[in-house]
Length: 387
Image (tube, rainbow, N blue to C red):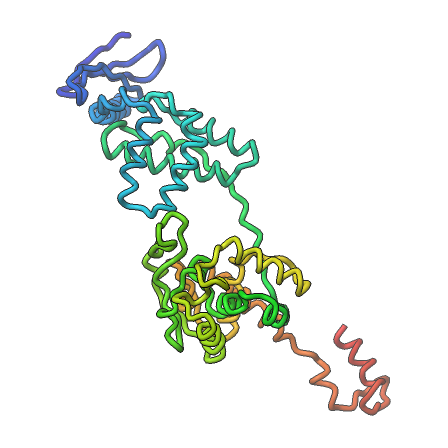
């Protein structure tokens, strides 16, 4: 390894004839006071020095804590940190995924020793077991946790950045046309206690949790106000919405308000959609009733959540703009509204196909030099023209 030379303040850089290219070395002091020699390589002298400086920043910022804390210990600390900034239901989801999948696979590793290959193996193993969504969430939550570890200077680099994400199939969405919606409502009107809730879901696009937690004081005659949602983690049964966009007012028609008012006068409940004994409805019972009424009306099964898509479609057919639809649905972005709106526009394009009979039906058509009266003969010629 001939040709050693020292650049001022840059460590040792030399041409490595045995391995090819250039190598640069330097001693750096870590945060815990230790001196550590680092080496970087490059195809040119400048590339080796650039790589050395990058490596120096990485090692110099590495915290001694990352060498003493296991992944399990760190994740517990991170979850405790997140508890102050996320909803209880979100924290429960984080904890469930990490405790079930991350800790068994990575928990005993020292935090600073975790490499992308470790995380990739855990994600791939979960995906191979048929849990693509869980694998996607595992990578997502670990990415958040390790990114925080970088900010806290436990580690110098987030290993999840090098992990390939898992492709998750888009859930199959159902949609009823207007005749099917009407058939469902006619069937449910006198057969289920939850008819007012179903009607409101279809005409307002409220989420299931928003419906069961809706207080009567938020039914304002011409609109409903959304400022809470069902939560199994809350002592009172409901919590504030997850995002600021979910706080919203959604207009309702006089007919819908009449149905809600009639039910309220019967129950006197503080809730808009209570059970028959006046308590907050369980989302599982609502789902069960919805499935029963769907089958009774002999309609294709869809998810309760798909009623939001039906509401968005009805709004789009009325000409409501995607941005407004997104606001009514409580979405931060208009992606769903745009896709629904485009679908409605495509329907209108299909409906715009002109029937050529409208152009020719009121005229006599000449065939082989012979005039024909309107009717079957003219239609026969028109068939040849159109087809």
